[in-house]
Image (cartoon, rainbow, N blue to C red; front, side):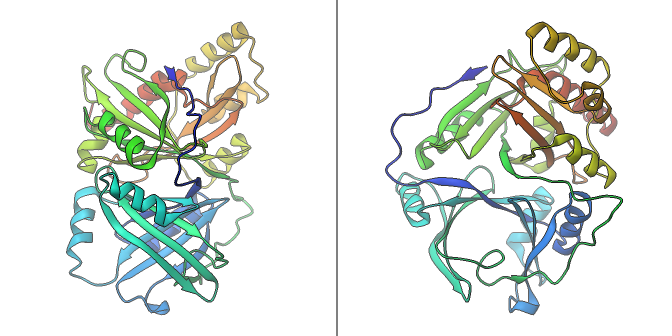
Length: 381
């Protein structure tokens, strides 16, 4: 595992404040949005479609804390580009959007350095104010949109209206309290991780924050390599994974096979109370990966020997199958859902940090073994 020194000089152009939103291309946006409101506790916030004057696409926007998902589907037959991507990838993340200070400047800098432009800077306005947006191509068919919110006070972006639906509050399954997107992981085919990491360095002035290789992260059957890229202020983190050679197919390669190339593998959502959040998600029917009880036997010994004080009850963590990783500075708690699509592609992580900025390297072996159990059930190990 490698921790990198943060650059001392801020890039001349571009400040990244946060993940603004994620846009999903799906076969049925209405039903996809309903899944995330009912299972993950998101709330409906904005809508665009026939009723708002958009004759081509329907978009349902949902939110939990500062996490915003926009689900998009075409309204008319014959949209060949959208249909081709949907056939190729299945439902998935099309756009990882960043909240920035200078959408035009970041776009022009990236394009001048060789990035492929998708959308030139454009000012969008309505009665709620103005937003400047621009987009570039990143790995696979994924894009990054830069969102500069000048004075906008509307529900999402200009052209959107408040969503007509409201999620019914269920006293038996209260809302899981999520906060913001911690990081977003992109899977690459073998030997493509390093070129993608270099793309973020060259085009967006990101730097290397953390990395591991297959000598450290492996099981009997599979392994991975990962480089985490971050903006100057280290508020936006983009881990980049690739499979490494093993006895059998790794979960990274399984993703690449079923997604037909590079794409967003998982979205890590930060919470301040992972026990309550995960319990509520489980009550709503979210299906999480499970590690064996021997993991917690080893955990108890490990934290005792290291002198780590975990404030959460280990028995409760064991019951919920929440993982713990730690170092001499602190610890983190994390848990991963099973894939949320029929294809074994996209999944989610819930994470709580206690002065620990890693990515759960100490849990990778246990996590991979749990995923390999699921792969075996799918006939893909």
